[in-house]
Image 1 (cartoon, rainbow, N blue to C red):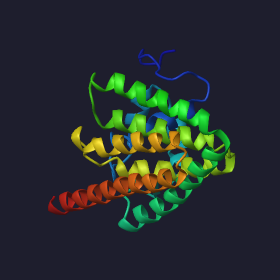
Image 2: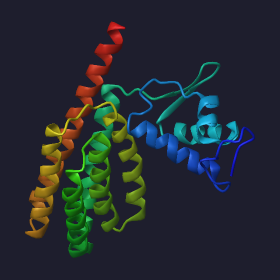
Image 3: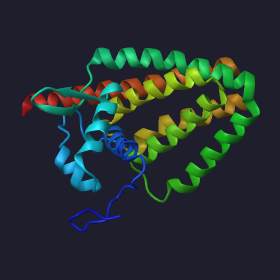
Length: 232
């Protein structure tokens, strides 16, 4: 499908709002669109080859997820978190992830081990092809999503996905390097190792340590961002 200007439409006719929403959301959560950055509706419309209507509706959906704030007469901007926002979101995420681990352990331990093993093996095979923040985020999502899915609780999964969006937003300004990702990847390995040992208490402890690392990275990213913007 093509626009009136002759450019190929990047989206199909069906579910334009949802597809546009997914694309903008991914740009926000990976830091391509930064904290406090204004969402330029005409530019996004041109980029995705759609009218402004699905862009506007997508932004409204993002506002409901607390990823975007709409300011009357000024525009729509990516949320810039406060330290309190980060702290509260991680407090919730720790509780949710611990419950996910417990339920997955009780209901689907063997299935979970198989899925996490597959994820870790794929990650190791692909790691040497190149590394960046998107790579780390992709496999971290797969790892935690597998645990949440194996918990087999739809209501809990909804809470998990909501708080995960928030913490991904907080991490989007993190400048994690290849070496700095090693503790995160090591946490995945050790969590999986203790699942195989049927040591739930160690799994829960390691999950808390893992999320504390993410929390610390988020706070560091916020402080760097505030210091940089203060000097501008």
